[in-house]
Image (cartoon, rainbow, N blue to C red):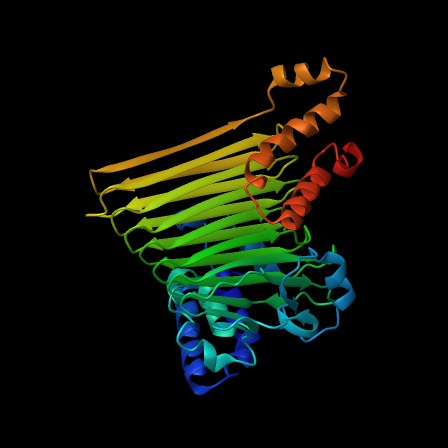
Length: 434
């Protein structure tokens, strides 16, 4: 099946979803359908997709999800946070498994399917439908999701925990959540996106997250993707930042047969700052792709990016980090780093950090490194009585911890650290070491 035929097949599959909701949403969806018909799915001739081939998807067919009871699975996979918790099973909100609690004044956390009209001022305002075929498809036929709306000066002490649970289905499903985060002036919140589920699930997750930060707003965003290695995961995060706002992203990718994460940040007000931290770990034949773009549109803006990859077996990683300093965006700082550790001679990384500068009073840096474990460090550990496998595992985990240790929520930090340790070739148990 060609990609063009696959595009037609998908449009046919999602047609029932397009007509759902109020009239304004139907019109918006129809516009996105037209965008998707023009764009289709990405292909290797596009520069941003040259290393990630989605032709394998053309061999598969996906159905729309239905409400399912997976509360036991959700609890099993939960991070156990003391948080406002919304559970989505195959992309559909599960009220029985969720805990919204009492929200402070000025804070709304609303499932989208039942509160579509509340999303009208936000939906599609930051993430353009023409960003990619996947983004257009999500807008055309997202099934559910959440609106997190923070009024000016609202401070949400508890994290908002968005748990997406994938189940094993006879026919794989197309899961399309939409996440909308709107933070008013000086509002503050922490959001945790977590994707996990059955180890046999072979669904496709296509998620779009939009974040709109007013002056002085501060949002910390965690994303932990540890879906089945039979799963496909396509994600797009779009952030618009006004004056003196701050956005911090911790993006950890452990699962997926093919996983792609796009992040686009617009620093549109003086004093805006973004920090992007990322970690990806591939085993087997996993393909993990991270593309980031930061546009410095205003002077006195700052961006810091640090992504690390660990690749084993025949896995492949892709990193493309791009920072663009636009004309008149003077006195900015943009720093970017990508380091990769190859644990196998057959693992592969394609890395391309980029700076594009159209102003002259800037401080910018970027760099990329790829290598294997330091033999001197290995020798030092082994000379202290540590076995070779354990030494390799400890050094690899230390490499990952340069990113993990920036995570401030202990439950998230510990889950990621344990998951990384358990997926290393040595597969050692951290709890047994202390």
